[in-house]
Length: 297
Image (tube, rainbow, N blue to C red):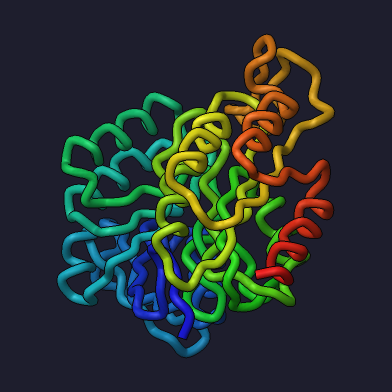
């Protein structure tokens, strides 16, 4: 029986914004993947039910009520950007252990607010995201928008800033498989970091090696390298998106801006390689490096 981090076969998921179009679509997909989705939250539609191909789920007025009635321990947030701050604050107030924020386009000061708020409340709620694909433990559960059928259960842990590269890596290494795949998002401020995931994978007895996907901008990868040097004994393979990016231009993600020499893909690659992380020049090369490691373990 393989383990996972933060999301297991026993996780009970509620969806904040389940009755909206994105919430409906992805609740249906999560259910189809075998995840235990147990209800939704929408104050305006409290007391109603939604039928997902024969699975009828209740809609609750608040996260607290949803948790009391269903035993939910994970919330996935699909509410529009202007309501996201309130939705996350409500989840934090209810002390749900995991809150996965899929919504993109949230004002940075709103994210800063709910991230700090979770900290003030003692970090009893882990926030993943925002603007992320979520978290999947293949064969067990799926909270967010990561496709459920592109990989298999296995012993690689994956943490990534980029949604699409998360999917590509999962697919390329599908024959070896993953314990948990975490998409942390690429916004300038995010709840769960590379380091948080590295720590959890290091402590997970069923994860043997880790793939870490970063991208240009900021210094998260450099900080992760310093953490790996001190605390991570499992093999780590890295990839940094944006090797061809010009300086001073934001690439795709709000957080991906390069200033001077810090934040470049080359600088990040060097920092990681200095601590023994093998870094691929392309996602496919990164997958190949991980394949070599897994064959030699």
